[in-house]
Image 1 (cartoon, helix red, strand yellow):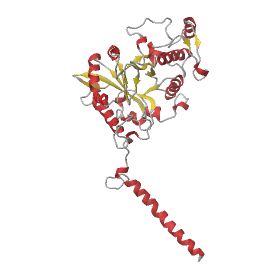
Image 2 (cartoon, one colour):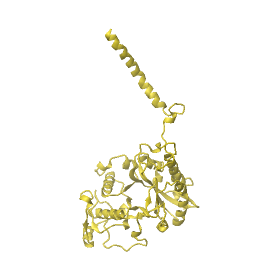
Image 3 (cartoon, helix red, strand yellow):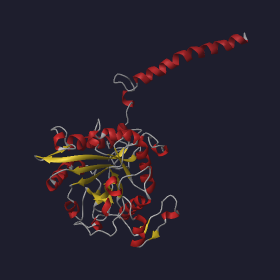
Image 4 (cartoon, helix red, strand yellow):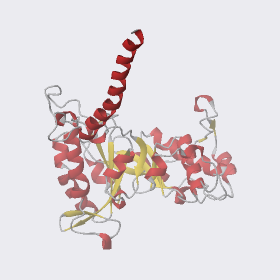
Length: 367
């Protein structure tokens, strides 16, 4: 009798165990479908980028991705790049003139998709009535700004004027980072201009601007000290250096700084500050020279550190493009060095390799 009393609940449990998993699977399979009670539960207002964590990578030549902009955002890149040409009062995106098509415009590939994403991230609801504070494209870190770097390929002044016109929808919704005459007000989207962009026009307005310059990093180097490895010196210490000491360290090597400070260019490097510029950028290979062997030389490291300190003193973020991409192990080592030394964002072609793999541990030449 007692045994029978235990068998009845056990049999019921076995029945429920066989049925319940099927019920759970059915709910999972039908969750959010239009004809189901869960239709209104499937999506959050801001879930366009859910589970994506932003990382400090720049999607180089982003328009070459299978899906421009979205592929970079899916990988978590906080910066994207578009090469832009002006023809007949329209801005076209492409690497060369021969690659341009009527459909691939800055509006269609970047401005309109960004506006759509931003509107979705900032929907007004009874719980979020004013859409404030504004949220960026990354739901996991809504304060992270997305950089849109626009590389001017032609028609500098005319392209600049048309770009300002086309940014109006983002400006009207207050989505653009801007300078108000005294401070930078960071917003969800930061527009940076590179290539043939006209610095004089960008810097002309002293009280308001919502586009910023990509300053020439190689002109910002600070050669006033011998800069030590930042991970090995407490407090990022430094040694004062006269010019002779600095030259003796770097003499006879590739990628060395000039033996004398060059004359100031037409636009003095002192003009590039956080008020008008965002990045300090340069070609890694042109500025530092080729990587011979498997590591940077001490003179190359000193020049790298001089670039970084010079840019950071001006409040700019450091970016190198044209970083060697092969062999993979060498690329990974250079990425590791750049991050260790204080470079703020990695310019990458391989989104998966940069954001989905632990390249910091890969020391072999072949990756």
